[in-house]
Image (cartoon, rainbow, N blue to C red; front, side):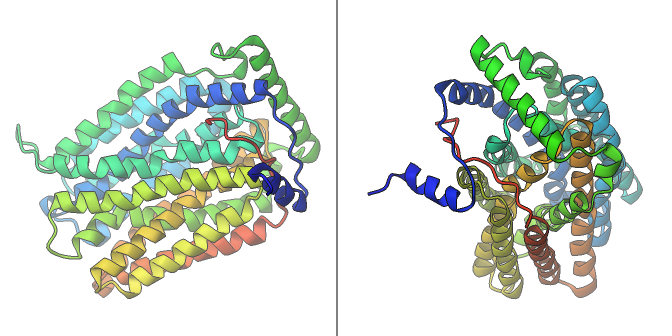
Length: 453
């Protein structure tokens, strides 16, 4: 009977992927680096994403207190991305110049103060203004971390590494949903629960920004947690990859920013992210609309799908690395998620069935993410990588405005969530189609043992 390793070797060979033997030096270097960086960066992203989407939980009471319509709320939730996109590429270019440690620390401190300042919102105008400022403050964080990871981990490991890092997105909802709905019940010092929510969930970003200065290192050369042979192997491996990327894709920043393939990656990400934010921002209110549920029950029902999505992200990322396949690991979860969202929309009047379909849809959205970021980071290096990754993220996150706004506008116009959910399904399916079209010139990765185990 063939071993699992032999089976993977045969499958990879059919795709033209060579799987070299892995030395203990390589495995230990990757494992140590992963344990040093990924948990810490995951906490940063957890805080970031919670501050970005806790508006969905605040809306359970804030909209009533401030008299916001669904359209006004959707506009304010999405306007965050105007500021975010405006500074995305410049922010990542600055990070590439000054180093990740100082720039990520700056980003976190500024967004923490602005996020806590959301407690000062008094109406639509101040709501829009502070959400826009929050986007300006946070611009560059995610593409900066993706660029940072590409400077620490060889290409064959990136899907699982990015997946492990991005688990912070669904985990932020798993933890944030019950905590946020609990905070809504607080009343003291003349503050409402939603105001407590913003203050208590915003200030940890400031403290985390200080921790960045103490914990992060800019370059593998500074990795004191590695032995000298491990450090030398990692530095040389990454340097060799950069040389090979330059030989294959030696293009300037200007050429990168105008590359049809880079824009294609951006539109794939657009299709995934519009479903991610459109669903994430409105999920608590969709569940609330099922009827007869307290805010605490809404919090737990919102958290559960994201727990399963976190597990799926890790599993799909590892499988993509082990098989060396990227495109189908993006497209198939996107198609499954789109179908599930369509089912949820169609059966919106059957709460249990609709909710189960929402669970599957959530899993599909998040499972498409790890393999996606392994593609552009395998093509780009240096300043081109900083600009290209930021551009892809900016194009994708432009849908962060459209998704929440579209669901809110359609709800006000047609009186229900089902049509908005259906539109999210269409965009997600289009993202899967584009993944196959744009990714047909596939960038494969060698199958490797899991560095964590």
